[in-house]
Image (cartoon, rainbow, N blue to C red; front, side, top):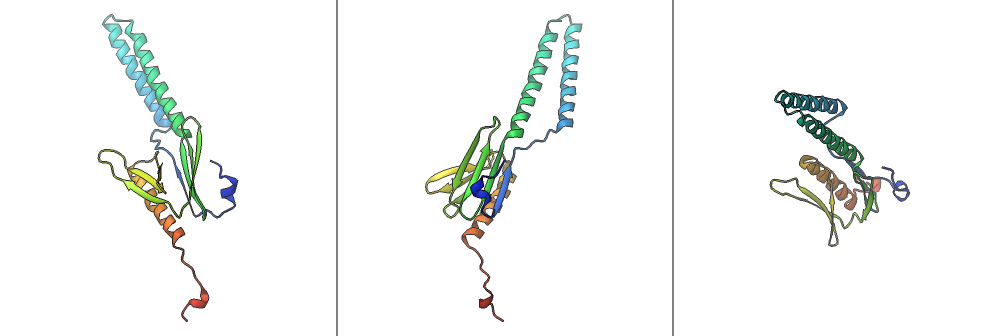
Amino acid sequence: MPVPPETASQPVLFEAICTPARSLGPKGMRVLCVALLGLSAVTGGMFLAMGAWPIIGFTGIEAALVLGLVATHRRWSARAAEVLILTGERLTIHRTDGRGRQEQIEIDPYWARLRLEERPGRVSLLVLRQRGSDVEIGRLLGDEQKRDLAGALEEALRRLREPAFDNPQLREG
């Protein structure tokens, strides 16, 4: 995702790219296809042996539908991303959903407060709050990744709000 020109001129203090987990690679997709089509063929063969030959078409359609849905989900998840960029003046959130729609949200980092909400039985909710408005971030991440992102972003925001100045004239020596 390209960095906007107004952000490119400022030094980037923190950057995070959030993408959905894709545990099934190309080889895994081929294995899934072969296994599903093989299972469908075995099921169709059993129905053919019982004399219910019209069922073969339904098992083929069912397998094609499942594989089509898995392929569509993989294609959409490959496009989805969320990029967080922190500069001295703003925290920018660029989002792209599975259909390619883009959204950009800008937040003043000095007023932003990060909150990780625990939800029993569900993935935690990571929220940036600024003057009464909430923005959920890390939607594509799992629980552990959200905790890591929360820790890293909180540390970056703290460093921005509380800079450490090193003045050689004030050093003891």
